[in-house]
Amino acid sequence: MLRQKGLPGARARRRALSDAALATPRRHLSYKTGWYGSSLVVADRWFPSSKTCHACRHVQDIGWDEKWQCDGCSITHQRDDNAAINLARYEEPPSVVGPVGAAVKRGADRKTGPGPAGGREARKATGHPAGEQPRDGVQVK
Image 1: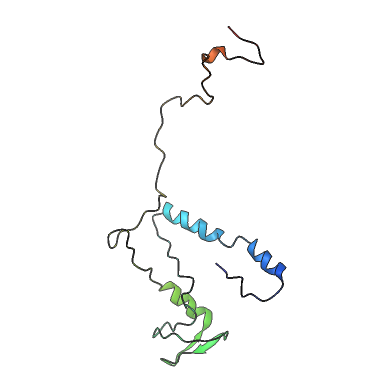
Image 2 (image 1 turned 120 degrees about the vertical axis):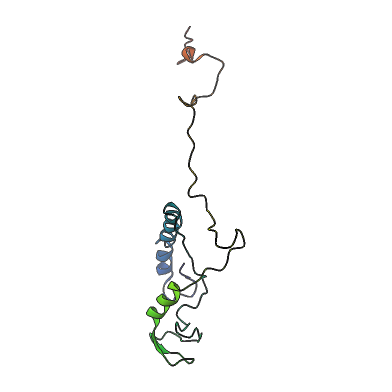
């Protein structure tokens, strides 16, 4: 999710960002991964994907520079490419809910069971048999 508080610019620009429904792709991915039996790994909001060297895992403050050199191993990194590699290698913290290695189901495979033939009567019971319902104030006998 994009953090809007620190964004420079007019208030209308921030309002337009909030109207853009940025959470929709994540919501779609979260329920569709359940359909296909895969899992969605969501990185922590504060995970330093751009600041972490993918070669030696050294984290350093890089500012807004597009290219930076790691102080730990002296490799020059492209900011976005380095972040993509780190996010691809991101490991989800272990789950404490289920046994080790078991996928935690989120209810996506729950199916509605078959109901009785004919279903149920849609209207409330009024005490009249189904064929003798009053219509427009006229009692049918």
